[in-house]
Length: 315
Length: 251
Image (cartoon, rainbow over all chains, first blue to last red; front, side, top):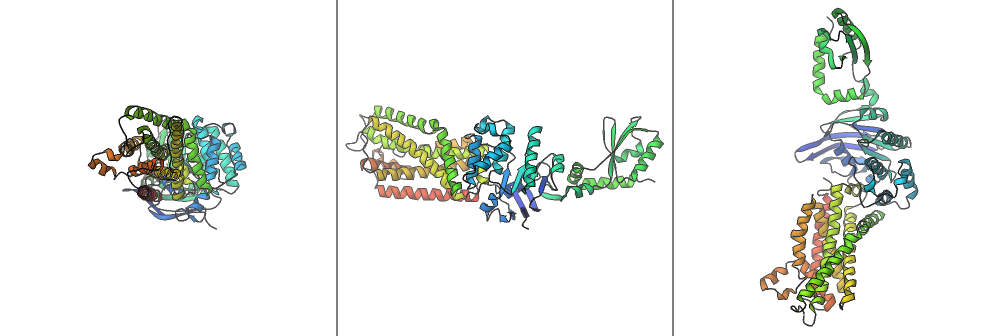
């Protein structure tokens, strides 16, 4: 089956800066996919190349089998993009904006579908209001509506919830989930990892223009070995024997990173030896955020884990 | 085809929605030029024998207004879209670079012609302006506006800030229009400046346009039309190359 998006060996350089360094990625039809990475990792550059807003220095991208350069008309017809910036044309009303956008894609008599998106995105009472007069959240909704106006099978949302209130965020995700159920492929970038964890089936993590992790969320989370324990102690001092395991401390809580559950016994023994009493204890499940932080920290994490191994094993 | 027509419609709607500023205001300023210059110079200057200075001036002013507005339309539309970021909606759409070019040029030509026609109709109220050949008038109005519309696209794409666009307009477009023989026949100039004027493509636009009114011109209208058309083709080729490679808009 043709993948929804197929990225092959894509490089992008801006002058001497390499924004993408040979990205390979395949997103299947019907997936809910997240592209994660810190600012400057190349997420937006990759999306812009997929959308034809930027040209790759090397490599190729296909959307539903259509090359974004050679076969750009078909590639763009099957793709809807919600840009990250809050852009709008101040000359037009909401409805005019959507009708014009629809016309760009060669669609006439698209009124019924435009009405439906306006309804779904709660824009009905703003339909004849000029874009300038809308609040930021409303403008964001219009951007989403513009991306959907030609019923694209593949929808890309570049940080759609940045600076958006809770209500709109929930409404937006409900609508996007419904689109996904109806068979649309969804690709999103976000800084809210819990959002990605709740919505997406698969994620790719980008770091400095390269994909450093690409898997289902379950596999990524399972790949985190060991566990973390959160403790509150009396007296409020962590015994020196446990210091090498400390990953963070905050307001009387100590979070220890353990190589595995078997080390719990060692922790308890050290506490008993030091005469500390456990007031609270929580075993933290690994989540996407932990995977993200570990993946982005890269080689440093691997090194410190080895040190912990040599110093903290029970003797 | 629908995509191209929609972009054309959007570009027309854009200036029409602010028509007071884009069509009516330039008409008023052109008529002010006409009143002032005709008052000061009517009795002192005779450009063509038997043609009153005011009547001589009218075609020049009409053409100047058309050139400036055709340029202003495509250039300001593009730079506004670039700076506010909404050009992205055009760039995301399945439009070819030729369609984008044609839509911007045509909308600007329409604005140029609308301003020119408006000024002409108002002057008819006060002066008897003869037109000996509507075909020549129309051909030069069309080619002149189209040339400036294409130049406007180049300026709009090249400029990254409003002051860069203003520089393009004030240091290239404005001197070329003012020095093209709008206010005088170049035969009144010293030979050096006369020769220099022949290097200005806008001179041929105005000279040929005037031929349509008085059947008199400094240069054969066929030659002028040929030169203007060649300039348009050359500028269009350059504009199309810029759009094709995505210069400054698809980095």
